Image 1 (tube, rainbow, N blue to C red):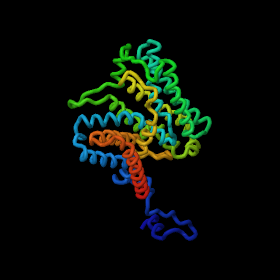
Image 2 (cartoon, rainbow, N blue to C red; image 1 turned 60 degrees about the horizontal axis):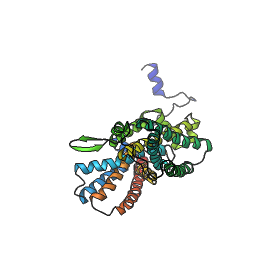
Image 3 (cartoon, rainbow, N blue to C red; image 1 turned 90 degrees about the vertical axis):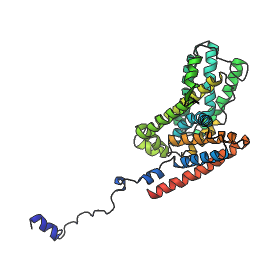
Image 4 (cartoon, rainbow, N blue to C red; image 1 turned 45 degrees about the vertical axis):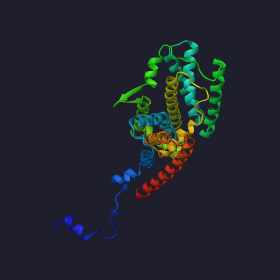
Length: 363
């Protein structure tokens, strides 16, 4: 036996400190979670289960629901809400709200239409001006939030009321009516319509281009959340902004960026609204902000912030599309739509809560 073997066999010398004990349980951060645990930990799991249930339900009660043209209609309804639900979800993950998002869509459309018509400019000039104005509103919300420390609920409620008044007041002041003038015969209208309100055909079925906008925003938002430093900042700010600031997270810039994201979604939705009908009613959009928030919550976002996903918000918007159009295909009274939407909100929230508790228990 060599000298080293003898020391091991004899144990530690008298008075010497005992070697540190090796834990039988390795650091849990080094353990690989099973596929089941990873699935339970996904924020959108509850919404996916709910979407499957809604799909099966309307497939059974509405004979025309499974037709390709019907599914295209469902996707269109989902995309018009999903374009806004995705950036709203990111904002909620960051711990904030935007109650002005619904009327901001209308403001964006009104700005494009009235600027182009009054200035006799190419439609694309109005579209560009609308983008700047819409982003300015988002920047206003973000800067006011960071400078005043007021709750986002109060700030965006004020913005909601101001935009509602501006939409109606300016439209009547400039045009004399509550709607804009037609811009269908102006230069650039055709190309702008191709970008924001055209259709494409797959398998003999026409789909609206908003579906592509929607899927593109979901992909970009998911990449930001899961693959970039900005995504870490969003979760950190939503979880605990003071702790995030203490470790160097640019809290103010992150919040302003999130509001700019909502503004961009409002701009896209507003241009779709304009170029779909070539005129805009100044009173549209009121109440839609709640549907965007509902879609995000159904998709797994927490009201308190710090948790959620863009994919979940997209699934929440898909549930909205299936319910709103499924009731029509089933030939039910559409007055019941809000009841079903409220029931889906409660059920999805309860399911998401249960899934999250299960995920935490098995972590």
